[in-house]
Image 1 (cartoon, helix red, strand yellow):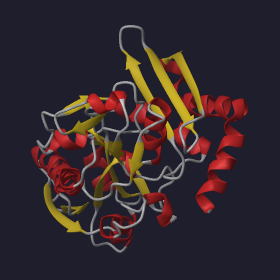
Image 2 (cartoon, rainbow, N blue to C red):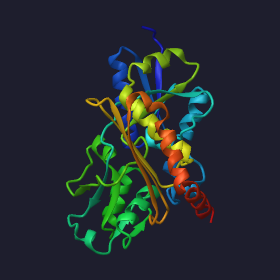
Image 3 (spheres, rainbow, N blue to C red):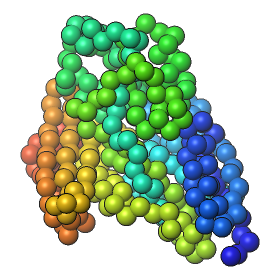
Length: 308
């Protein structure tokens, strides 16, 4: 075993560090030497603007991309849903870890009667806002930014009725409160619940080490979801949801994808079940169907709205 120390780049939030330590342990168990290097991303610093207003995708990954290209770290660990569908030149996806809980949850304050009446719900996600308004058009939505801990504290400090979180993030750092509802009606963000490790394309030693961490089923399902997102031209700037699940018994992929208007009034949805052999183009074909079914016009309207 080579003595090269694999330097693991990560954001410095509690959740990001948990993810980095998870990858570190798996590499250490394979006999590799590792070191964790934490950096603060612009997405963590600029908390006063909604993500879509910052005007770039990859706000949480850009700082680590630069650190890798500059040779300060060898790999970076990310929540896969935060990673742009097009990686910077020279950086490649090296491993996708087995997916955790992909659902969203609503954290509330012990009483859910507001679901039947007026309410104020907090989320910084365009997708979650649109899906919530689609189901609860009379509710008010407020923007909520920051890492998981910050967002939980903001919910506690404000008179909001609830806030939407990814279940996986709260479960990973044991912060999932008793007061929550699983939002099984809400299709998640593409690749939600999955972690991805990226590395430099020319770093054969590190790529070989990481290949042993890859979970093929999760890799295929997240590829389909992200291909759907990329074909719709989503990034962080449109309410797009997607979930692909592999059925081992039937050897099929079940896919559901959605594009919504920002106010949630329009929803174009697609559901498909295909043989596993057809996975490579599933996301692309599903997105094309949505675009041909009014999605292209809706995407144009969304872009115009976000320019204002």
